[in-house]
Structures are given as structure tokens and as C-alpha cells.
Image 1 (cartoon, rainbow, N blue to C red):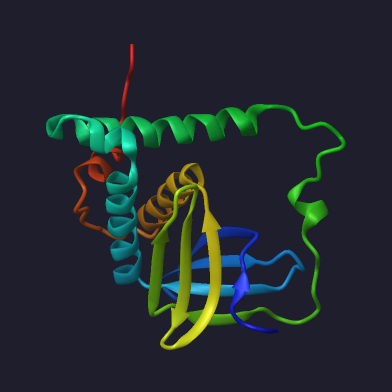
Image 2 (cartoon, rainbow, N blue to C red; image 1 turned 30 degrees about the vertical axis):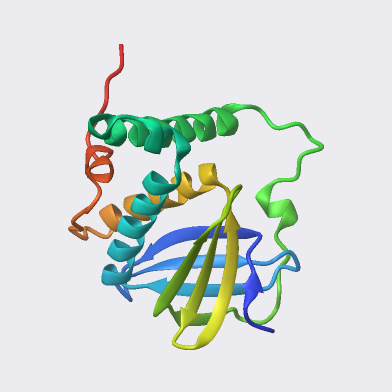
Length: 182
């Protein structure tokens, strides 16, 4: 397998034996790499991505300072709501399921502890480059909506792990409480 792989699909699970979040990434050919994230790396990643989402949103940056956390939180909740609605729609038989598109490879995936993640902001997407030291592991291009989903999934896996993370972005901490909108 040639690294880095270009990510076409990713999944997150908590591995209690390792006390790590395992980020499973797969490329278009079905090659897989398991990227292990420590508690410290996960906290830094959530906070960093939260700040980047807030800083890169034209809607947020044009809002008054005192409303920016509310605006980014609404954007985050909208992305989660859209995903919930998308998943609730019945699939047609022409749409492949995850099982249909996953190619089973005989070889075991490479497993690596992530030491660095470089994040680039582009007009239509974000690029995440995962590395183990100087060794590149995976490159993922993620839309703004998908980045919100990724931050949410990371946060949920950290909660599942019972990791007490502190959030540098107020909107991330606010997202952890229940919201009732009338």
C-alpha cells in the first residue's frame, strides 16, 4: 500500500483497549488505514477544527461579535439536522449501501498513531493531512457540512470514552447541552 491514501470514506470508533479513538479511513480502491488518536490529539483536533469552522464562515464573520457563537452553533445544528434527514430518507435500490461499496481486502490495514494533523482551508472544502512524524498517512478533503459532522462524531466518541475534554470554543461546549427550539 502506498501512503498517503486519499480518503473516500471514514469512520470513528472508540477502542477501549488502547484508550484511543480509531479513525478508519478507506480510499476509492478499498485500501484501509486505521489512524489512532490520543485523548490529547482528539482535544486539540476538536478545538482546532471548531476554531477553523468559526473563523472560515462568512456568515459568522459578518455577524456582530456577541452573536458569533450563536451563529456557528446554528450552522452546526443545521448540518446535523440535514444529515439526520438524509439518513431518514428511504434509499432506492439503485443507491449502493456501505456494505455494497466496501471492498474486502485480505490484508490487514496498516495501523498508525497520529502525531500531527495539518488542516488547510479552501473555498469549498477543508483538507486534513494526517501524519505519524514525517510519514504521511492519509489526506481527506472534507466539505464544510461534513466537517461539522466530523467534529460532532469526534466529540461523541470522546464522550463515549469518558474523556473530560475542555473546549476552547464556547459554541462547542454549548453544543453538549440539550436544546429545545420552539
